[in-house]
Image (cartoon, rainbow, N blue to C red; front, side, top):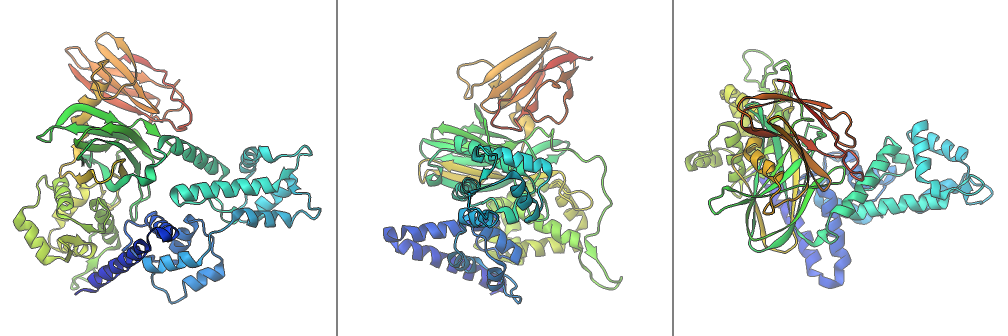
Length: 573
């Protein structure tokens, strides 16, 4: 048995042991169950699986910070001795138990009190500014002004500030955030780069609390990972089949995500849920995301039993296409002409990124359905049973799934024996010639069902193009009582061109229809609009005869305020 398999099974056994121990304690140890749930949720905020390792002291410190703990340097040296190579999930749980959750209120009060010799309970703005510009990373003057506006309610008649109230407010914010998402805003000694970031996070939390069902934590949840990518000059998306065995309320959400070696992209997403017929084809019942909290795009809807296609999309206005290709890098790095050579660092990193893209359920291995999806992206064909048999015999598998090690070995062989085939795979998945992922945006989806044991989710082998669902979105703009989604609809007609603004909840889109017999060029002027993300204030659109298209998503930069669309349309030819 390989070391990978031994480590994986040992880790899985340890995790099951922890979970079964907590379960066996029953109702008498609800606190114990809550503790292990906190450990798991915190760990999964950084990793896709509890089988993954913590590979650095910084990763461990970040995880502990996210759980509301703030270990000292001495504690970190104890948790991560100089000879430590890595920690696993069981180690992390032991450290979480040993390290007490930080009480920011008392810590901050003690800090502020040391600057208050008269025990007045307040400090002048000048003194507070001195503390904030000398402790940790200094605040800029603009950040200080914004911070003091946040704590205006703590100001006393003599223009001093009640530091007990300030400390309580910071601690309250940290506790609320930790309970909701296991992410705590750092203390003054480890603060964000700007006060504005704190304001934005506060808005996100407020809008998230408003949008999410209050009891969402007890709903069934299935996380999935997909991606948007360019293919043959158009955007396509991973799609998932959501099946419900009985009627249930569902809450679907999507947001851009980080993958290894690739930072998260800032992208507007339209999440579409389409009812499927008995043959798996689209029906006219479509639902779109209408909620946005500043980070996550979501949809709440009551669905009858049946199958649905869930697809995240973007219009591409903030997902720019490359203008030129960078210099091509090599797959194999050779010391001399006689050596077989090893994979270049760029190729190693690209394969690691590729693995995370293909592993859409995030379980650390690639299943037959995930490999079929990957093959459909690259070649347009699924794996045959014979091909799958060859793959499973040649490369390392666990439970009929290809391990990360097996996937790397498979692509390493292809780099040496079929360079053209590997280039095709990278190119189709959105990598450029320098093996940078610039034409693909990884997406995280969370699918929740209020009823338990009624929902299953499976990735679809074939990606869906925007053109395939564009007509369904266009149908939403038609004033018909039998449409699944309702919204505010406004249409401007110029000759035979109809420009429609559709707004529903916090989101919407703009569509254009040409009912004439020749193609038209239309310019949309959106320069007077406010609180809406626009790639450009002016949109030049060429639309063919007797055709229609959706041309712009409407997403508010500030989700607490309404989108205002003021549009002028002009036919240019």
